[in-house]
Length: 147
Image 1: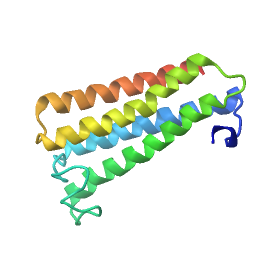
Image 2: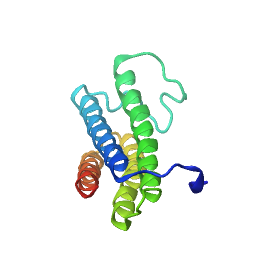
Image 3: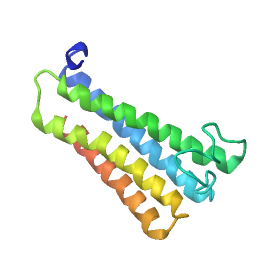
Image 4: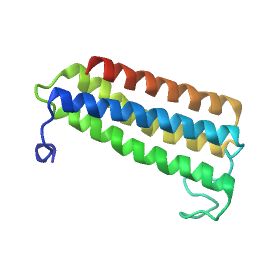
């Protein structure tokens, strides 16, 4: 499967790294919108929303569910960046390891976000969710710097 992906030049990989950083920054902003609008329990259950895959209409539900969907999409982008690091020519082991932190961090965010909702926004989970976001951003900035 990996051999089916095209190879990436250092310049192309650098651009992908920037795309990941910008999108990961944007998802932090959507998370801030969830927090600032009090929409954290706009979807009171996880992974579904109000027990359904497609949530009912409502502003808080839209904000919370939108953040979830956007975060999942960014997770796939992060996975692609890691795969691109594996296909970068010449391959650099440091970029492979740093880029692996992005999809792993996104996956961890999904799990921590789920626990945050299931524990009704308990402060420890909310803070862990935020700190993990900052750690992922640091990894993305590190990737851009090294690329």
